[in-house]
Length: 260
Ligand code: COA
Image (cartoon, rainbow, N blue to C red; front, side, top):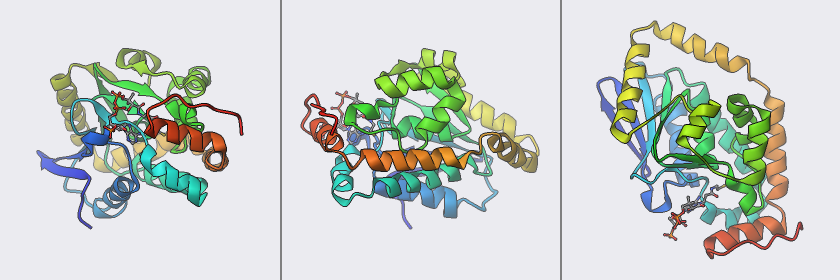
């Protein structure tokens, strides 16, 4: 499989993945998700010739501005929202359980699926212009790639509930204060910090690193929550509100939700 939407570079033992759809603010379409699945689940799943991964977005505006809303119209027609969420969960579990550390370098908007992707990584470093949020309710749906589960883990139920119910964005400093990101730094320094962290980890025993990732993740291993999220996402994608929300985004207007 060749990569169309991911740029993959190896430098000094670190693999850098850049999600490269800047005109769509690096939104995660199904092709891009498939490429992430291929990288983490097949291509690099058994490789040991690198110490870690830096995952970032192309351009200076966005890490990832969410799932690709322009593909949502087809999801509403097919009625396969639950399967879409389940597939997203599987791919993000591959990242969360990857044998080498994955650092999200969040260089702009990390919204919806973008915030969820960053949360599936092991560490998060934000540039000062980064903004975070779960704005799915603006579209008449809910987070479907693990956001209702992982946001609780990082920032606690109260703030997670606030962000998910309001769809409000927070800036990088607030994200750091809440524990959502490890560091907030100016653009150049953020990348240096990612390299520094991966270089430190590279001096440790690789098996210990892999086992640490597994053990920390096991504390949060509640598959029932993800299943509930996928079912709820599936139900929400079958509503008139979702069709209205997705259409309103594409037509650049305010959505008129009727609760139907
Ligand atoms: N899916 C598909 N396309 C997206 C996108 C997404 N999630 N986010 C942004 N884009 C596209 C826009 O449609 C626009 O394309 P166009 O030039 O063909 O019109 C382009 O990226 C630039 O976005 P635009 O909205 O014009 O930039 P902005 O600076 O006015 O606003 C955001 C930036 C991030 C606030 C806004 O794009 C946004 O709200 N995006 C959706 C975020 C979201 O709801 N994510 C969760 C999805 S589940």
